[in-house]
Amino acid sequence: MRSISQRPDLYCINTATLGFKTSLSEIIDECAKRGIAAISPWRKELEESRPQDILRKLKDCNMSISGLCRSTYYTAPNQTEREAAINDNRKALDLAAELECSCYVQVVGGLSGYSKDLEDARSQVKKGIQQLLEHSRQVGVRIALEPLHPMTTADRSCLSSLRQALDWCDELDPDGYYGLGVAVDVYHVWWDPDLYSQIKRAGKRILAFHASDWLVPTTDLVNDRGMPGDGVIDIPLIRSWVEEAGFNGLIELEIFSHNNWWNKKIASTLDVSIERMSKFC
Amino acid sequence: MRSISQRPDLYCINTATLGFKTSLSEIIDECAKRGIAAISPWRKELEESRPQDILRKLKDCNMSISGLCRSTYYTAPNQTEREAAINDNRKALDLAAELECSCYVQVVGGLSGYSKDLEDARSQVKKGIQQLLEHSRQVGVRIALEPLHPMTTADRSCLSSLRQALDWCDELDPDGYYGLGVAVDVYHVWWDPDLYSQIKRAGKRILAFHASDWLVPTTDLVNDRGMPGDGVIDIPLIRSWVEEAGFNGLIELEIFSHNNWWNKKIASTLDVSIERMSKFC
Image (cartoon, rainbow over all chains, first blue to last red; front, side, top):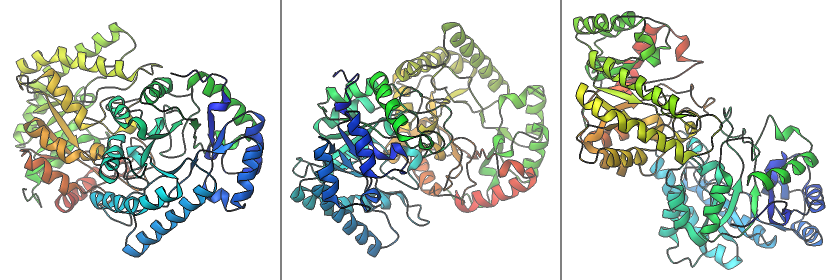
């Protein structure tokens, strides 16, 4: 297991952590000042700038983009909307390629409309992913399936466990030709009794490792994540498993925190982030 | 699959549904009036009455108790407290026997104190259950392991999936000598991609079937459950799987609803319960 203490060159900041209130350009400057290796931005943030300008700025700062966040939901009430989502995700793969992102992160969608048909939702997602694999290979951006916490199954992600994500990888890309893989976010998977065995099974399919902490009590199903050290997740243990499985990429901090971190100045959050990632990841 | 429409003789009301504001005696009267077969009460409610009085009243009403709720958490910061919890659960088994309950429902506890050691918490629970198996057999009350939703892993239940519950059954009671089994609560397990296979695997180990609905959005991790029909769970589908696996017991309604159902009069909640269980379970 790598020592990552005071190694911002091994850290990535998912821009969600900073509350979507600062331009990408300013975020890159603040991260560069601190020697942080990469960011994972959100597509909506990229609408404000030309991709080539962002890429140039990153290169000037010796930084890069890790994952591009995130897919348009694949689940929708009808075929027309599902096809529109796939087309949208195809364009996002092009954008990710232009930005030289290492992967395109998938949050796949939950039940659409008033549906109770979870099996159908899952089937919609698999069909959508399948239609993007060839394009993903062609543009050289790997698709990272991110299982989300089961508390988001209804409205955000019917992909609910690492086992399920790996089952989909095996089904859609059995020999790894398309590079289909997974993003392991400790917040979403830490509770899983099968986590060790599934991380081991994932092996080289692990394309990203995200950290944040589970607060007790948790007061919101989406926006109450904690900074590493403030909660109960044994992040170093899970990182050791991921690295044992072969992952040697960046450690990415991704915190949604409506009432706490998003209210702070980004310089302060970045300083605390480096300290906490050093100690608790 | 059984038809349960307008069959209150197949329904059980978990008294939590009624908000803990009415005496057991009054609850029994109101349920009896409507032909409901059974209740599942909480231990704290039984402290107000003598068990033999409750049992006599139930028999007079041609009713029974399904599961006794619920175990004292097995996880604790030290050995003394863990032993105290086991002793407490042993006494609860005696109470359940006196009340002729069909099972004793286990909510096992999460991480204790400031621990991040989830594996240790799970080991504490298994050791606790193991020490109660012989007593459970002797008094004739089966222990029902209830996996809770993964969003409760930190503070309520480190038993987080049906697969894990069945793994524990296989480990602690491989040949079924002690009658160790599981409670399947749709609210806790509906998201699980392996639900069908694990229910099939459970077979005769299924001791209880609990219903409520997942609301979108859900605003609280514990007390925002919905009445069947108000959310997105396909309860009849899961019931069909449970019955295909051999379960032919009561359908139990268990709703924690701080801001909605708990504010209503229990007569009204019971009337709506029968209607909704008829239509949506």
